[in-house]
Image (cartoon, helix red, strand yellow):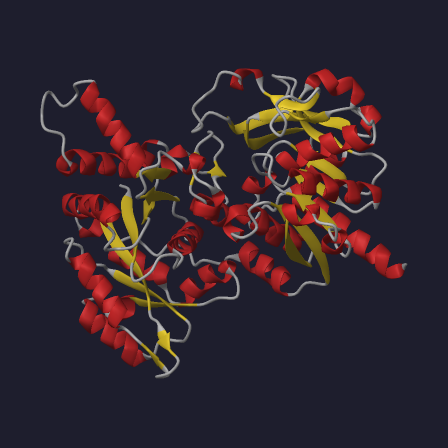
Length: 539
């Protein structure tokens, strides 16, 4: 019988509920349990697909084409398991489902209300994952902070579910903050006490407190929290700030969070978590033998979470190469200034990031030309690949008026153009080419060598593609199409032969990089950057 764990947050947002959820899931997985995690987001958007990256960070895409919260990326990176659209639910989805049922007459004329109709739909979504696999435990992270109006229906649904299934099948972990007042030299528990009281006002008593802190919790502090929050002493867990998010599972193991959870859910201990691959990864991450500087050319650099999966893919691939990858965020618009070369002249590799719209494209094209001419390892993702195509047709073939129709709808030579099935699309949400598609690679290509095979599946999120009308002219531009979608014939990968490493991909490889399986293209790119740096040092 599936058991449920709910993770709520208090005092402040951005405490790391997703990391705590993923860390606990990893430990339970290591003990032999089948675990999954889902995220409930209290905003009214149907999904993050229409949200500005500055507003919400990156939009994470699953194999089945769901546009989801970036926390699902953490779930996949920690558990090394794919998620689906069932793993991310928003208030918008909940209300849309209930309203559609009301319009269809499913409620037989009853007044549709938050209780029971909205809460019933939330509970149905909690249990929906049970139909996909025989899970032992489903961890549900509730977005937002206790006390927010938006979160109330989720907390009420949690209260009801707990009452229905019983305490032995459902427990609540409350993540909170223990602030340190430097003037007083003290950690303060009062915000946590108030947060737990706020949760109690909804009828929910937390079973476990996980306390984010900059300093270690003393026995006295733990006892105080236990007494005033009505939680057992051994259920007050210290979550001290870590140098990397990948330390958190080991920290939670030391705190015995997994054992406390298993005891409360009346499950056996299972095997002892060894985390061999995880510890090996951390060892290589913290003891690099080399270092490279890679420029991340993007338009949303003010918020690192806008490129979260790319940053994490560099962590994974850096560890795989025993290399410290220093990612230098460079705003693409900064490369449109007169002193633009100063931003990129000391880099060992250049990655041009995904994005939408015209802003910053000129700077991205300048960076690509610089990488091409100076033989610096280059990696272009989605828009980055499209810009590489435009740059080659513009500066190598010198095709007049060449551009992407996204940047200039009236361009004479749209080498990047809107897909035919997108021409009449007006709605923005969930209408792009989304999810995993097959790609066939050319034998002997950079990509095929990196993957070690010629057939791959990668995740997409875009409207524009390489225009196959220009396929015959692509080689004149110095590029080769080395990855093709076998069903549609669309170009997925382009490479440059007369270059140490020049690769552009239409898909998003960063979304499939995990701790235990770093993405092969990122690993190959980092390896090429190491080689470039060493050759420069010799020279």
